[in-house]
Image 1 (cartoon, rainbow, N blue to C red):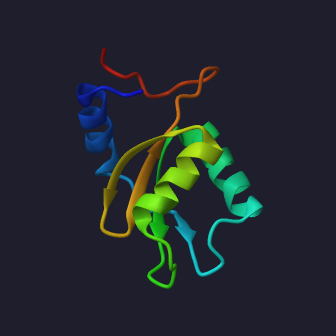
Image 2: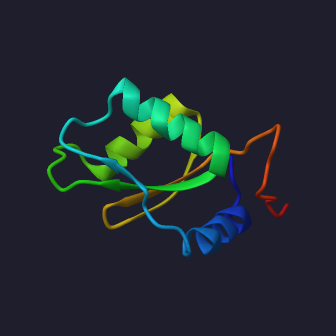
Length: 97
């Protein structure tokens, strides 16, 4: 669980990131989960764009991703969800206490 200081820090880091991953009309598949899982292992902080053709609400999608990827939802802005998961072996992002 992230505290408010950590969330603020991650939001500031996310400002420079582009949404490289997209959830489209096929919604969340096992391949999507695998792709995002690998991205979180490598980068720890990613942005996921949700296509406007997706029928589910972004909050619902973010909860599905949170539960399946064991990550934290940092923020939802527009159609973009920012996710964070600490890499315990090779962590690049050091969160404030």
